[in-house]
Image: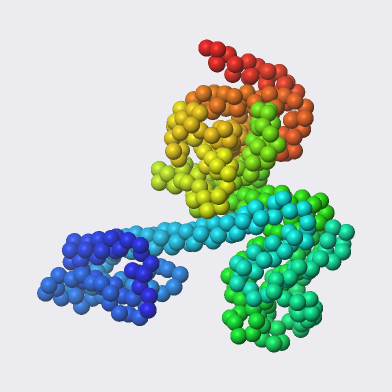
Length: 479
């Protein structure tokens, strides 16, 4: 049996609604569960209530109803608008708490997947032997999925066969690859099947641009439980991220790409929650790198800055798409929820143990120099270097991109707005670095590549405009 109390974190609204209907409207009120058993009731003593009506809760499954009874049917009709109002409020609370639960579960799952992927990335960075990389990946996935055995069979750098194993002999690998349940495997899909001897197999392809280059297979021997749908989903997610990396490792011997591909995949998933922010994290990362280059940061610092830029909106996974894409003005409650996304980002990334400067850049991009930003209200130099850089990159991309509530601004108008916020909102040095970078021909080409949709008031006189804007920024400093 299921009831509304099973899905309410706080039942205060339910109790208040029952009290209101009973005491103010002289109704007899009973809450039923899915099997019709009363779980709560309110009724004045001696009240005769022969007329009754049931009002089911609106939920994805049957969780019962409210039954209201009155002395007459007319009295029940008069009370019905109040009953429906209370029911609407309860249904709304059910929806909010269900969405919160789903979001919490999604965040926990994402945090676990991130933790696993970054743990693998940290282990293989610095390994220059491709086969050793595959072995680390195989062992970690086998451990995570609690597989008894496993193997990866794929191509090497010059298309030679590479095979790594986990607690399985080469003869057993050959027999498994030839087993009936894998002979007709659909290319490109992760599957669970049962081998002839009763063992459970979890198969996942390794894909490249030109097709399939190999496979990962994990085995639970006969007598152990079969792989679950959630384990299949986890391996499918891992495969989608590491297959491009396998190809990159094979062709270019670049281990750092595993780390960055993971970050990009996650950033793209967040941007996809809102059609207007498609590509936003990519552009913010690239604008930030442009500023970092002008400031003279090292190549490692710029790599870390790129990662922080890709991750800066990760916490928006905890925000409803209806709020992110709302065309009108946000309510106070909706804006307060939006302001929490850097906190959500911090909670997701904390278990991964990233370098502090990356974490600060990803979570401080809404802090402002005068302390009016969020979530912590930091001021001036208390905001990290990466946080101050990404703040400028983030606002520039937001201003020059179309939003549901306004059109994209021309580049010149966006830069003016940034300069109007010098010292109060944005760090002067970061803005001056951005203006200087935009003046070079190389940066202009890079800017066009980053965002093909940029508009200008007068692109032919952009260089002169940038000179004047930089003079304005320097003049305000002297004053």
